[in-house]
Image (cartoon, rainbow, N blue to C red; front, side, top):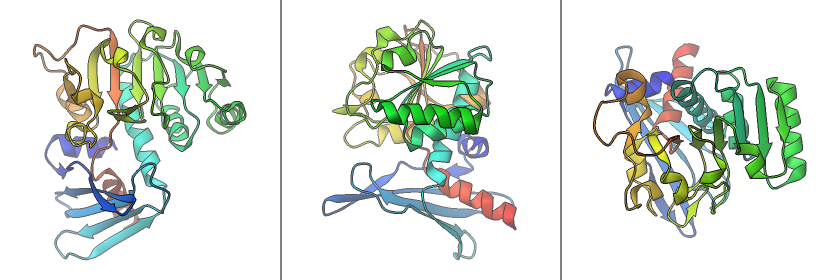
Length: 288
């Protein structure tokens, strides 16, 4: 995924905001991308149902740009959560100090698992606290994390207990209401949010935005493309958002307004268009 972020930063990957097609009570969602590479260009898409509209198998398709033929098709949900977790891990490694080795995780679903799966690869975590509303699920999640990832995960009964005093916090829920309060977070906390961020449906509150000092996302274009709008764009004093790729390869620009008055660093995962197609294209290239 670092390669995809770099390609997007330097104009080698076109990644527009996703689009929805209303089909009765369902919304079929499409993300698309096009890459221009010396070894051969491609374009492709991923289709899936919008969250809350039911479950169908994801389909990702990559076409050969020159010939217009299908290079490969992936059916299933393996690519998206791995893409999402990997980009969060890249952001976390870049935006936090190496000694920030204690993690609070809210959520125990598929996305939360792949967040921790990827984060375990970029840091030697000394403490991981996990919370979700279901006691059985959070205990099973923590046990699986210890067994499969080798991280010292423990389940805790309250979200506040999971995040309070932790230098790194990840929210990966489906909640339509805030699951944490800003005053639970220590000064200087890095927070990554994976779940809902739309007006009327968001896993964090406006109180968190008031404490932002630095705000980074994987796709500024996607933040602007939400419907209903992303709450980052509707606040009276919206944060100045930076693309993660720009931060990684061009550094933080010395421009007034880049840093807000707050002390928190926020990474807002919204999905870089075409990223799953990029992953599939890489797999196909490596497979020969």
